Image (cartoon, rainbow, N blue to C red):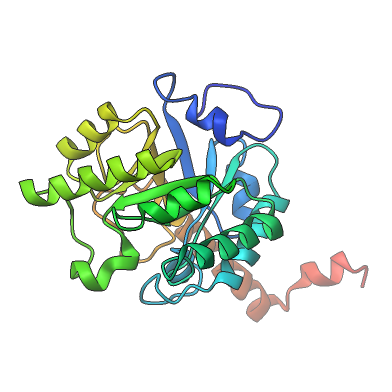
Length: 271
């Protein structure tokens, strides 16, 4: 749990200032109920395009739409008051051109009130990051295993295991930091590579399946709560089995309805 006490929403500059001072804590949310619960605990909330898989049961993140991200982000912003809120930009919403990226990112910030956006950005897309930052849009750059590049990468595979691939990731990190990214999210990156990037970076690094040496960590909330079914990433520690609690409550409700006609309902409505 974060050790500092806040009375208002954490800003991007305050998040950056946490590097070297304390570890940064983050979780994902796409609904107001989860967002309210994690708001006092985390430093920033990410509305990830993983919502496509976790919230909608889709096979990948590629089908997430801009309007869907906007709707979920607005729900999270409206139901929180402490955590910095960062929205994931969906596939095909920023890769076409600098102008397309600005229009869509500006729309997300303006319509949701979130604090920043996250882009999956290799060295080639660093110029897009630079274009956005120069126009007032804070950008977290996601490197390493990039789910929007899953078809190019050949699946969800750990990155940085070879010297050549490690060099590519390091170059992506340098390019995005030089472009003005306020943070790097490192996914599925070999520990040695993530550790070195963290040491070399003046901006905070956030790991997911990367090195504990990163400046912070993020997980998909449903993964740590036991709500993701059988497809739990190997690096995830499951802290609770909330799914079992939900199933038990639903089974007891069903039993009451079937066996007793749900007498609580008559009591509640004064019948």
